[in-house]
Amino acid sequence: MNKDKDNRTKMLNVRLTPEEFQLLLRKVQRTTCRKTSEYARKILLSEPVVINHRNQSFDETMVELTRLRRELTAAGNNLNQAVKRLHALSQIADFRSWLDAYENDKNQFVELVKEINIYIGKAAKIWLRS
Image 1 (cartoon, rainbow, N blue to C red):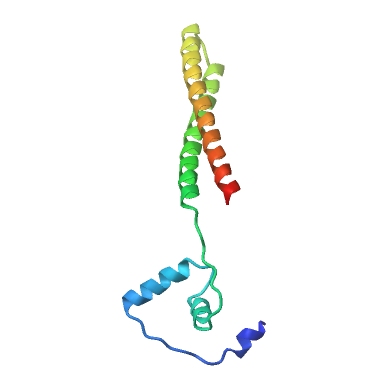
Image 2 (cartoon, rainbow, N blue to C red; image 1 turned 90 degrees about the vertical axis):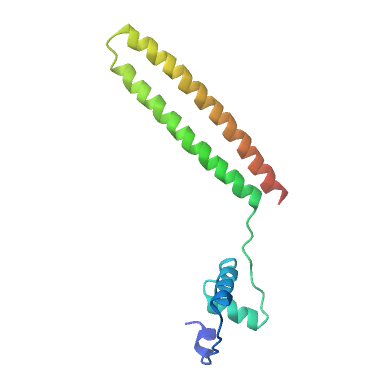
């Protein structure tokens, strides 16, 4: 067992208003502290508190990459369905409509891949600067 925990026999009670308590919880959530008591102990004893820092521009990039991934998955599913239909064709007319749908899905797929590459390039530049 940790030696520090064995020595902690004294308690300190602090009364807070609901607003103060909510503010305290918000501050704790922005740190790497796992418990409110750990955060309070560090503040009271003037120890350093590590704050989680989020890169807002990278967050926006991740939201866009997630959206693109969903669209890419949908396009891939459409391509898979088109291939399954090809195997079940019984008439030439069906084949022509499949080819048209395939070309449309393929073009959409290629455009999404290009868009993803652009956002990945932006993310890489952001990370290289930090």
